[in-house]
Amino acid sequence: MLENIKAELVKLHLELPKHNLVVWTGGNVSIRDPQSGLVVIKPSGVRYEDLRAEDMVVVDLNGKILEGSLKPSSDTASHLYIYRQREDVNGVVHTHSRYATAFAAVNKPIPVYLTAQADEFGCEIPCAGFALIGGEEIGKQVIECIGTSTAVLLKNHGVFTIGSSGQSAVKSAVMVEDIAATVWMALQIGTPDVIPAENVEKLHYRYTHVYGQ
Image 1 (cartoon, rainbow, N blue to C red):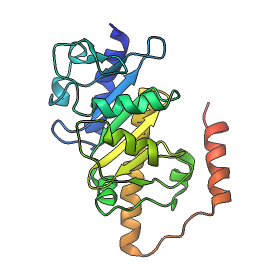
Image 2 (cartoon, rainbow, N blue to C red; image 1 turned 135 degrees about the horizontal axis):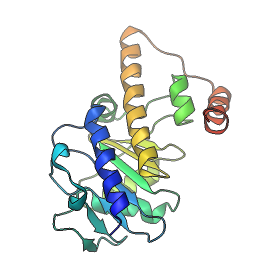
Image 3 (spheres, rainbow, N blue to C red; image 1 turned 60 degrees about the vertical axis):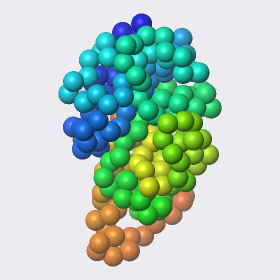
Image 4 (cartoon, rainbow, N blue to C red; image 1 turned 90 degrees about the vertical axis):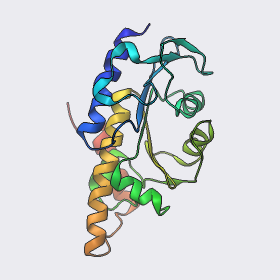
């Protein structure tokens, strides 16, 4: 089932260690197939370099396993909760990327200090509350707190990102870590200035409607 999505997931998962967003077996990516509504997600506890397309697990939106011999990610219930609440989302990523998680550890959002953040997110990156792993609780925090952003920090935990596709969700995860690292460095030097909201809006519009091919 959904062989193209399984193959895409192998490639997208390899982007996470490539960009230093995960260590060992932490983190995961899922993709929802827009046609069938089924979700494909990483198996639990398998190292990234060992992942194969046939290892991916196919589930319905209620968590019923339809294909796969391995246990799905321990974050599956939260991924599915997000998909059920957001019809516009077809990709979800979870990481414990170092700099972004440092902000999560101290329960701080990331204000818009950088044009790169204005471009990609169009708003501050919020920090949600604490939730235990294994059920829908993390997904509920994501939905409650993410707002118009495509990334949200989770207190004491890590990062969740969403997108219209798996690739866009992975891009968001890469960008939030890069921004968090730069902001952390800036905070060692002094106090950066927040970009005014009207300029954030203009930058985000240009990036999403004019930039690129």
